[in-house]
Amino acid sequence: MGESVAEATITNWLKGIGDAIDLDEDVLEIATDKVDSGVPSEVRGVLVEMCFEVDQVAQVGDTLAIIETDASTDNENIEIPSNVDESHAPLESFIPHATEVLSTESPTLSSDDRFYSPLVKNIAKTEGINLEELSQIQGSGKDGRVTKNDILSYLEQRNLSKISKGNPITSKVPKANTESQVPQMVVPNGEDQIIEMSRMGKLVAKHMVDSIQTSAHVQSFVEVDVTKIWNWRKKVKDDYLKREGEPLTFTPIFMEAVAQTLRQFPMMNISVQEDQIIVKKHINLGMAAALADGNLIVPVIKDADQLNLRGLSKRVNDLAKRARNNQLKPDDIQGGTYTVTNVGTFGSIMGTPIINQPQVGILAIGAIRKVPAVIETAEGDFIGIRHRLFLSHSYDHRVVNGALGGQFVQAVKLYLEAWDEQRAV
Image 1 (cartoon, rainbow, N blue to C red):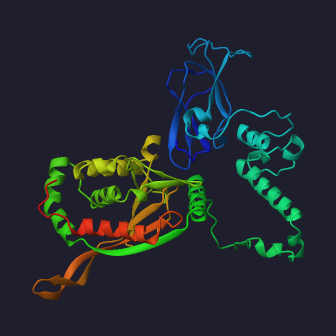
Image 2 (image 1 turned 180 degrees about the vertical axis):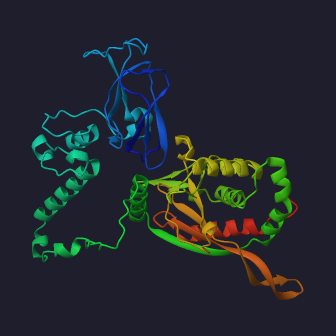
Image 3 (image 1 turned 120 degrees about the horizontal axis):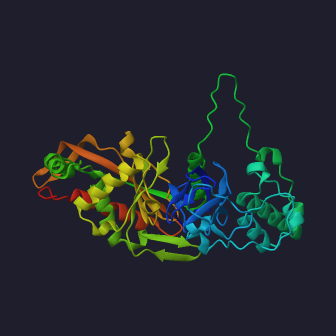
């Protein structure tokens, strides 16, 4: 479901204990920060154990269900033996990319009264944390479980402590006022309304903060005259709707401009991995979409530079419709190399979007406005009414300098302003 997925929330069990399961039949439904999805069985058999309850969080490597493969698939009079030939369905089976970097082999640790996920035990083994030390870590998960974030925070504090003890200079530094470092507690009064953040809302918030902490965000802005595009779309949209049965919006036009410009500037179609720059072969455009609950999702148009305007329009309408109806598949949100977001939908004339990691750029399209503008002609300049918008380009200044970031968004502007008003679609 994506390289960054490390855990999933169990949202619904579709099968109960003793139910027969066919090959590739969905057993349960899970939700990640990216998409909700059913988990199919890789075997045919009978469900004998559900390892998680609804709303519990499963880490990569956890076993989700145990299926007896030798039992009768007849639903009547099924007996669940105490000793069964078990076929495990671990979470990493459905998150193949994550298992490339997260080992699921359980380290040799004697057990105590607490439950530790394979991911936590693997981190403990790698970092040399014994059971006694592990048992001292305060867990923030369900029933006091130690989560990945808990053990990573503990390791960070432990490493800082070692550095402080080993550096004689630190002893001369005045002790920090720890009280000032603690976020001020907000105390609601009796008239305030308290709304619990949704699961996806919490994850989106975390990803936004992580992106700001990862990339050095810089913005460039240009204003674009889209009068030609406005007039052209007005001329062809009714015939297009009759012929195709769906509207021709501005979004595929902007997507075409960005996709073709990325072909000219391949160093905007990259990702950063430590000290390496990975230049992506395919141009896969993400289109940020707002959901009914206010959260965001970014479905991806694969190989967008290979599609004509009609093909882009079909893909945009299909992904937008399935996003609104919560029908996106895991593959629909994977593999994006650059993202476009239309802030003009909500009336904003410009914005400073946050980069969708691990990409290095995102373009925000502002609202189209009728404004007075200076029009240059061979006979002289004059004032006229034009349709214009702002493009806001956020890019990662670690690897994209101001020249490249500015040239890219300027090239998108020139592509849009040179639109052929006689073009067929």
